Amino acid sequence: MKIKRQKHAKKTISFYKYNFSFREPFQILIDGTFCQAALKNKIQIKEQLPKYLMGEIQLCTTNCALKELESLAKDLYGAKLILQRFQIRKCKHMKDPVPASECLLSMLAETNPHHYFIATQDQQLTTALKKIPGVPLLYIILNTMVLDKPSERTLKHVEAIQLGEIVNPAQQKSLQSLKEKEGISGDAEKRGRKRKRKQSHPNPLSCLKKKKKVTPQEPKNPDGKKKRKRSRHRKHRPAGGEQTEVKS
Image (cartoon, rainbow, N blue to C red):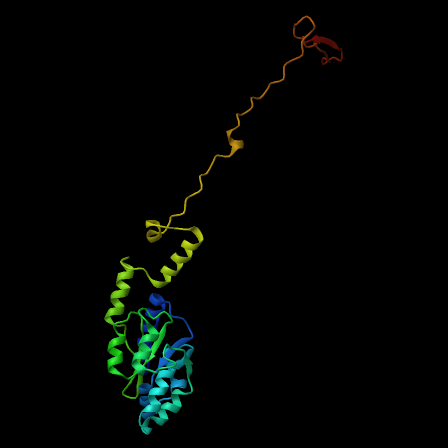
């Protein structure tokens, strides 16, 4: 069963890596309800969560989540001690704390730009989080931690990106940087400007006319007539030994 859960987690993490640019160390945003469930089921979050996600993690929370535990009953004192060990991320409610569920939703905005995993047992918060694309959810069930499968809203968002109906946030950033560099405006900003190919000109050396080969002429006499070749006399010796001159 453990191997099956890890295969499911690996597949889900690969989905978020490929479609939403999640990278290690994974940032896990945790609330008090998750810490209380982990304490009740004797789950060591710091030791077990990296093994389950098969990668480096950063456990974090918000000031609002801590304040909420402080205001509740003493039964949650153990959960508060666990939550205090994690990094505290700045939220918009430092002066006026709000409920943890409201605070975590504000940290994600509309597209989860900081790539947070959310670990919670709050059902209302979970329902709200499933309406935001690209938010991996962690919860505890039957004494084990479970990474939920991508929500229907997330799957539709990925499908829309593949069909070209919407632009992926990563692509949007690259387009924006391209605009700043090349000054793209108007309709060209949406489509992206195509790079113009450099016109290739022929090699100037290949355009030169071929020089005709000049055949050397035989020298002429002052009269304008060609010089006649001098005839050579060869001497052939006959079989008897006498020499005879032969004109060639």
